[in-house]
Every structure is written in C-alpha cells, then in structure tokens.
Length: 247
Image (cartoon, rainbow, N blue to C red; front, top):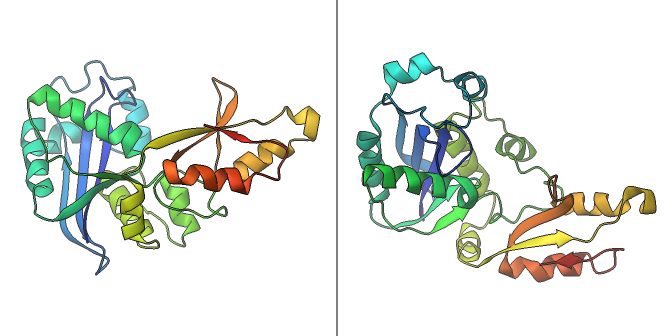
C-alpha cells in the first residue's frame, strides 16, 4: 500500500490564520516499510508572519528554525504547494497520513491552499492520533513519546520531515489495512463521567487516564476522540467501573 505522510510546521496553532513555514511529505510503501519519495521545503514570503498567533522566538525555540533561515532557504508558498500537489497526485496513494491531521494539519493546509488558489487531490486521511489502535500501555499522544514507547527516538522532533518518518515508522507496528478502514468512520468525542478526587481518591481520573482520555482544562472534563466502532469497546472496558462514558 502507498501512503503519503504529511506534516506542517507553522507560525502558530490557529488553522484559520496561521501559515506553514515548513512542509514535509513522504511517499511510503507499507509492504516494504520504506520511503519512496521525500519532499521537504521551508516556506517564505514577505508577509508570512502577518496575523501569526505565535512569536518568531517561540517558533524558533520549538521548531529550531530561525526567521533568518526561513528567509535564506525558504521558497514561495505557490511553488511549494504546486510541488506538494505533484507528489500527492502520484497514482494509487491510499491515504494521507498526519498526526492530529483532522484537527490541525488538514484544515490549516486547506486554508493555506485556498489563500493561493491551489487545489490538491481529495484523498482519504488517516490521523495517527486517533486511528491507530494503541494499547492501554501507550498513554502518550505526543509523537515523540509515542515513538519512544515503540522503542525508538525521533532525533529531530518538530521538524516536518522527521516527524513524518516517525509516524510512518509507528504505523508499521499495526495493521494498516484495518487502520485505513477505521479512518473512514465518523468521529465521536467521548466524555468520562468522573468524580472529584476527594470523593474516590482520584480513582476515576486514573481510570480515564489509563484508557487514553485527556483532561480538557477549560471544560474540566476527561475526553477521548475515537472512531465510531471504538465507542462500544470503551463502554465495555469501563462497564464495571464507578463511572461511564457519554458520547
């Protein structure tokens, strides 16, 4: 199977206004577990930071790309997105793969493309945040930690092409045909009916955490985003606990 791994490093986290500063894409053969084509570019034009939700200093600290490096090595978005379109147009690509792609990479990319009047093929997307059947022992959802829990290290985290190769290496631990099938199901957000730690000593919170639920600080609740077929699995797993799952 051919997959197209994709990752964007950006000027911030608002998918409506922020822009990609680095684009990494890898055409991956799952049968041979190896890359076939690699696309990696920094993005630059004079107004790229206009409306950005993160400072240049914060991005440099996280991504390790300086503003000066973008100016020196970056190419115009139109050139880069035409190049991305070419690699995405290769025949027989089963899906695009991105970590947290549904919530971030896909909508941000589509908004960036719209800004420049460029279209890309309408391929299925696999989100390695929710579509991989991680066991309960894999509690992390940040890509560097997921890699470590699978026995390897990403030496250049938060650089697009290395994050792509990392998630493609992770996906090889699982049944890719099954993942592709599940990725086409509707998305459901589960909410755990936990109780305050003073009522049960924190037991229900620990159960939620052990099942991969994440604490939603603004709404003060534990949530987990899953595909439709996983809802009953979660309900069955927690049927004997002191709390239940609501969709």
